[in-house]
Image (cartoon, rainbow, N blue to C red; front, side, top):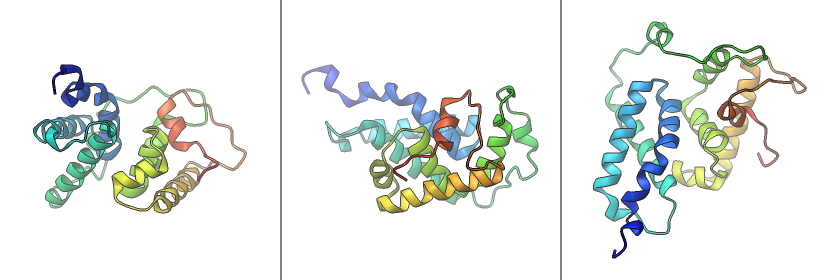
Length: 185
């Protein structure tokens, strides 16, 4: 590499926001998400020689983050979770707004989805990845991702008592992307 602009390490910082958002969706804890992003960046930096120039840096980083998350989860199976919500109640939250969809209601409903559904919704709905890209990152078929997204959106609608014709006031574009129905599903 003769030109520093072609060094893939220079592109890592451009994906920090998306990595943190994905990490928060998986961990539901800001501090844990920050640790997960840091671990991801360390792994990416030390394995940058495995990154193929010209390929999707963001997808590569999301795959590292996802794999790191599941590895940590397997290691921490015996740790006590925040089952009663005492810890999560101390975290900052967006202020409620007048619309039907309140952030807290969404968080409660989103937390009730299984890991695969949360992951699929986050990648496709909030992350902006295509079904094909999400399927590749998760190591499953495209139809599996479509099915997970469809079931997750249906379950969110059920948990939040949203009918087919319900109108929602959304102030958060990430939330809007997650709950939006797409014709391609």
